[in-house]
Image 1 (cartoon, rainbow, N blue to C red):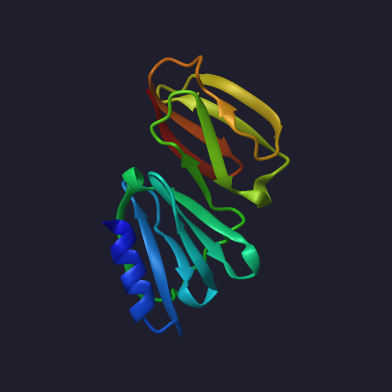
Image 2: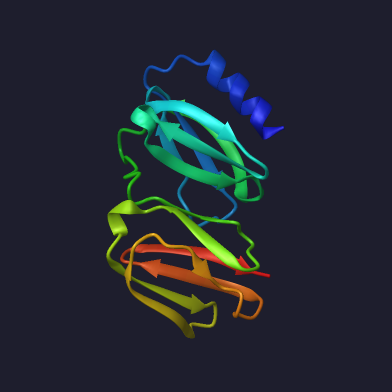
Length: 156
């Protein structure tokens, strides 16, 4: 359903000064914004979709279950999103392997994983974008922190 509405909206909107905003169920997260003029393709997979930008650059991958709303409007002049810093975790919730999409500007930084109670459960000294094996963790809510980026996920 989201795929059909998104494709129809993209086809009918003028690309000049318009943006697509992808909202998450995480109420603390700002929507991820892409200027329509920058989008070359939206690929739909099983349970997710990916935004590809001009010149084949990945804009991000989004799990259908985590998208609360997709809206269209004018490109925000106040705040632009650094797509190299935007990270999306999939799948969320996760059972075994957590994939972090995006965040290329954060590569080489320390990555820490905390339980929702604040217990430190994992440290990667120089994270390079690799997936995270969370199969050993008990079910619950966790937070990943890399520099100023904080992402919440649920372990089943």
